Length: 254
Image (cartoon, rainbow, N blue to C red; front, side):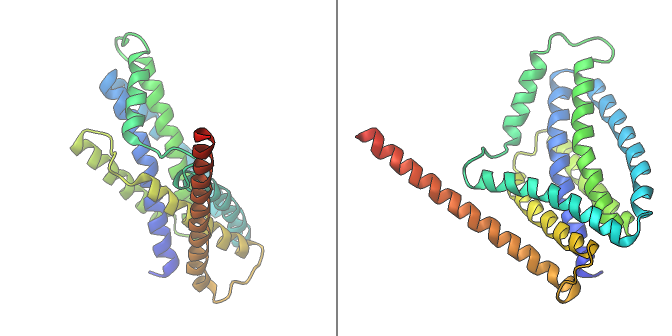
């Protein structure tokens, strides 16, 4: 196993674990508050839809010429990774509230409780919320696994990493019977943002015939560079926040 394959497994596993944690919180909230049967049916229908999407997109991606594939995948990963990294930097810098699974669970539970009486048979609210949550978070899992796997011509490896991540998160959720609030989700999103952005830059460059110094050896340096940039940005944002708080305090005393 080379460094790129190891990076693929790590990035796919972490990203899919984060997305599965968020989906699990939604499903548990409507399942406990309203109807487990309806919620699980919603999950099942969403999984069937995701399987159909994967079956359609997988062969289409792998059929592309390698340079076109790397350009497309690199561009998509770069856009996707920068979105993750931007939110992670804003959270770490104090400009956006940290994601809290316990708070998300409480909010979903309140919304489910306010949705009226539970319908007999299949409860539409529980079904739709569980379906939507599983489908939206699952689409990100499918996207990450397919893009990483197809670019490396090893979709089974990426799919296996994604499946293990899903099984681990769901297994832990079933055992503890509570939202996984102790998962360091904000730190994981920060790491995933750095990795997706780095892989996107690397593969996007290869797609436009850029020659990276040392080939795959350049990838760890890209990861380190993006990580350093992100940490410096967080530090700068925290200093600005502290300076703003100091000015506001002095103004209030005056």
